[in-house]
Structure formats: C-alpha cells, structure tokens
Image (cartoon, rainbow, N blue to C red; front, side, top):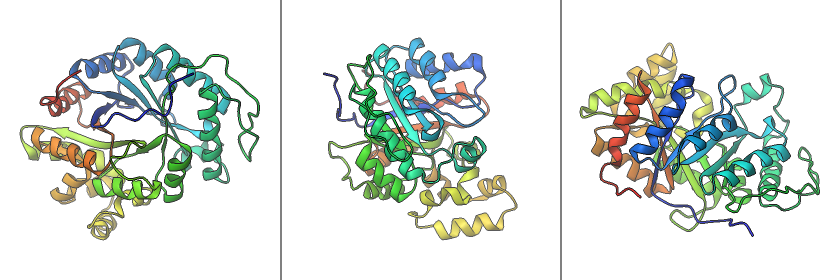
Length: 332
C-alpha cells in the first residue's frame, strides 16, 4: 500500500523559482538552491508564463534531494484524471520529493481563460477529493457538479503519495483545506498573524501532527538592513490591492495601510513609501539574523515550510544572499 497522510516535516525553508527567470537559468537556479541547502524549491503557474508540471519535471530530474512544490495548479485548468496521472508519474519517478498545490486561480485569469466556475468552492472541494483518491490508486468518487471521474482507477500509483495542499485565501476555502486536503499554501505576504488566522479557519492547532502549512514571502538579505528593505519593496507592490485583503486584515496597521494605498497614485509609489516597520512585518528582509528571526516567527505561528521569494535584479545573486539564513542550520 502507498505511504500516505505522512506528518509534514517542520521548520523547513524553501525558495521560489522566479517566474520570469530566463529559461536557460531555470535548471542552474534549481541545482544551486539544492547545493546551498534549501529544503524546498517551489515553481509557480501564472497565466501566460510557464506551466507548473512542465517546470517541476526537469527540476526534479536535475536535482537529487530537494523537494519540489507546485504552487499552484488551478483546479479549473485541468481534468482531474489527467492531473492525477501527471502527479502520480512524477511521484513515482521522484519518491518523497513532490508537493502538489491546487487553487482557484486568480479570478481574472480564469475568466480570461474561460475556466472560471460559478462556484469555485464547490469545484475545489470536488477536485481535491477526487485528486487525492486517484493518486492513491482508489476509484474516483461519484460524479459531482463539476468533477466526473466515477470508477476511474490509476494503474500506476506512487509508493509515497505526495501531499495535495490548497493555495487559497478566503475563510470558506481555507476551511475546505482543513477538510479535504493535506494542508494549506499561503501566498505572500504571510505574516505570523495571517498564518494564525488561517489555521483558525482550518480548525487546526499549530504544532500538532497536522497539515502542511507552506508560506510565501518576498525576501531580501543584506549585511545592511536598509539595503535589504529597499530591495524587497518591489515585491510588495500588489499587497495594497483588494485581492490581498485577507492577508492584511489580521494586522494591527491594516486600516492605515489601506489609507496609504488610497493616497498613492500607483502600486509602486505605495510600496516605495510605506513605513519601514510595515516592510519588516510584510516580508522577510534585513540582515541574516533579522531574516532568521522573521522565519522563526512564521514557524512559531504554525508554518511547516517558509518559502522565500527572491527580489532584486539578479536572481542567482539574490539566491546566494538568501542562503545566508541557512548558515546556522545543520544540513542533512
């Protein structure tokens, strides 16, 4: 029988593969992340950029140890049977090294692609339930409103079933993650207060042998704190927009942040002029010691994996600087 429902390893640190990385730098970036000692590498699937599965396969093949996460594949973008086949194959070839993230997809992107359902919550519940069953080699469930795969059985299934986690923001969707998935992926910014609030929606107590909780944050590390804070601001341009309200609402300065965004002519001015203390709270930035403390706070709030999103003009140089947070940690 496949291994499944394994307890997630805690205290992990990962890094995101930048979506705009030149194609010839993708595999060198992945190998460098592994060599530096990162536990995880996450690939993204944003409309018009690169496919998540197409990135994950070569990255897994070009590395030997690092876990690769796909964050996220929109539920409305792929038939669940064929998605399960793809994920099961990767998990067979690279056992224990894959995490599958599923989400609604950004609403405007999904509408543009003609794949936005009337009820995203119903779709993601049905899709996640079916996907997990299929990857485990169990028959597909009875047909639902959107997902129909009753009786489908995968012939080839992995010995180690990859976790299927939901990259979602809303309280109802996060509650669904606690019911039908193996965990939750929180997009940036994922301040400790947001992590704690999300775990409440999942009805999960931090530090129990419970779900995977993966967080993303814009990150910059430098010996000079001001330099790091200046670099990370470009990673915070979007967070004043309405779609990010769930991330901001649990913070004590949420009202002031909205007032600041309303007073700015555009998102860049908003990010460049927000108070330094907000930048510290909304990112992982500063000296290596300060960045380690920010990571530690997220783990303490309930994150099992903290994923750093590089900022700055040179992704490989940023990767090397971010790895300085790993220095005190024993490598396995």
